[in-house]
Image 1 (cartoon, helix red, strand yellow):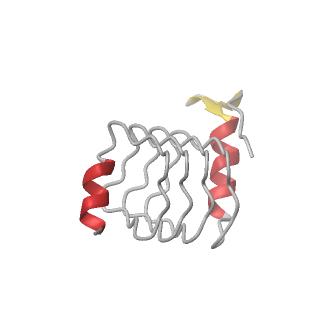
Image 2 (cartoon, rainbow, N blue to C red):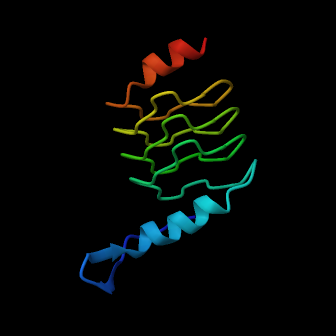
Length: 115
């Protein structure tokens, strides 16, 4: 699944709004345990406090996403790009992070804390 960034005007004085984030927001609200989001483009999305138990995020684009205090128990994050993501307080116990890019997100610290 890919959510392509497309600019769309909101018609308000607040400026423009990305359609990609609107679609991602709707997707996030409907998340279920074990959902398949392999390859999803979730860059910059706010997943604070979300329950992502056993969600398949393999190959997902999660750059700059806010995953603070999210539950990623047993989530599949194989080959996901987590660069610059906020993982503060995230629960990564049992998550598969094989091949994941965790540059500049403190991933090593989070993994050590989960042991």
